[in-house]
Image 1 (cartoon, helix red, strand yellow):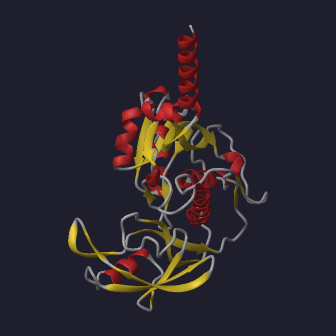
Image 2 (cartoon, rainbow, N blue to C red):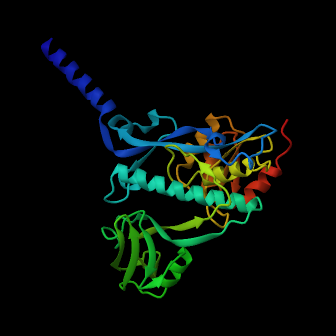
Length: 332
């Protein structure tokens, strides 16, 4: 009996450990889509009332460390996806640092969303490209340990770099193995870093430094626009914010439909791909929205796998999103 009792105690302890102890992996889970309206604010003299209902919704993903049980049986969680830690947190970064990266990317996304929406609404909005934001550093690239996510790259070999296109043009003058001098700005001021380039695995003549670039951008808005994203991080809600801001300014964007949207909005109005499409599609379904705007290409294909009757609308740009919504049949 003692042996049986001891065995039951050990079994119970093992079960508790499986449920409570975190693994080294991360788990992505669906989060029901949320209305954007309460998060976007413009001055009272600019705001227009929504007369036909509907609304714009943004989608997010629950992201956390997986338990041992979840890492073994991810299917226990509806819509779960397991990812290794290096797919979530940049090399050498802590979870807190990753949250700061996401916060800064969201702030950038909000600035771009306001710029694109106000321009589309007919306002003049002066803006400038200010450099290349380092979104992430490759774990196996030459920049690892030398550059940090959220630093701003402003020059290469002493030549000013304000756009991603300019960065790529300068890098095309180099061969793999060349050392490039990168001028970056960060929390501790400006510094110059030498990085020895490597060959692109898909094109051995192309020199890489091993970063994921994001366009840094500043706009002078004609009036204050506040977007309170709360705990939401990253740029993937950019399209939803842009659409809702247009609605706030008097444009009938949703045409009475409940519209979920995801996609990174760029200063030229193009819509870039995002991650977590599986979870976001399930989250849109759970919120019972009518349509789901998704970046065209692989994102839209993946969304289609989990749509289960939800209308998926692939879009490449903000204006295409407006046209797609305008051509929906009248809401019954």
